[in-house]
Amino acid sequence: MIEQLDVLLQQLDDLRARAIAELEAITTKAALDEWDTRYLGRSRGELKNISAVMPKLTKEERPVVGQKINTVKAELEQRLVAKRESLQQRELLAALEKERLDVTLPGRTQAIGHMHPLSRITLEITQIFMRMGFQVVQGPEVETDYYNFQALNIPADHPARDMQDTFWVVPGEILLRTQTSPMQIRTMEQTRPPVRVVVPGKVFRYEAVDASHEAMFHQIEGLLIDEHCTMADLKGCLERFAQEMFGEDRRVRFRGSYFPFTEPSAEVDIDCPFCAGEGCRTCKYTGWLEILGSGMVDPRVLRQVGYDPAKYRGFAFGMGVERVAMLKYGVNEIRLFSGNDLRFLRQF
Image 1: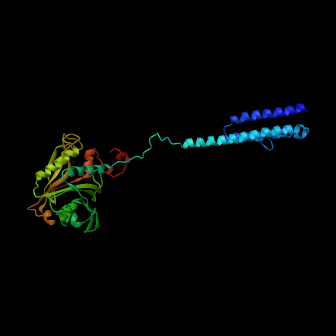
Image 2 (image 1 turned 45 degrees about the vertical axis):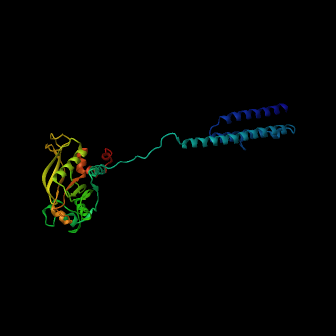
Image 3 (image 1 turned 180 degrees about the vertical axis):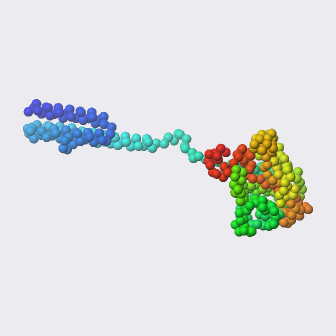
């Protein structure tokens, strides 16, 4: 019987050593649960199997074997609890590592947009004239027939109205402005000379949309009224603008033209920046590109706002922002500016 007791005690020692060795190598909860079932399981565990021989032992052997079984079981259960806590701690640390932020790295910044090319050109144009002493004013896009036409020397039966197809809100009374010129009248009504303003804004015309025409586009009007003002002042002002916008080597040409609210009137051209005036497809081989219209303010317009044309004189000019942008950036399609195509806009 002593030999049987020694064998049981040796089996328990071997089971303990084997279980501890396997436990130390375990790295997952699934493997740990399998180890728990194999060694400490209540129905099929190896300790349970050894305990099954207890009834066959003598009264003297049972306490010795029972105490050994309890000692081994207690140690393995203690190691099991410690291992389970170790695995939980390891999983927690792994989860935290995935969420860890390296504060030494630069942050991910949001992509910042930039100004639309038309907004950039508008700002550049107005800043050029502001450096010459002009102020920037803006006005309503929905106008009356009086300010859009009549006060600008364009009565209802004037043939010049046929040049501007109009979007009427109330026929014959309220319209979407066809030009920013109405602010010339509004400004002069509210201000005594001297007057120096530029007026940027959207205008609307019932146009056949194509590569060079839009139904909605942008204009910048300019107006200067003072006691001493001549055509030479107009030429000097616009030459300065053209050279600042398109380059100091730009040449400017004035051609006689007609506008109802200016007399005399002139179209203003610059020598083609794409061929330096030699002639190319862009300038239709003339060497010149038209950029704006201008002229001396008609005396009848001055009388309309209460200015004495014998005392005050002035000049006005107007340009299309899209036109200037197309020339400056070499764009041959006006609809690209209103198409909101990011592939186009990101180039500016």
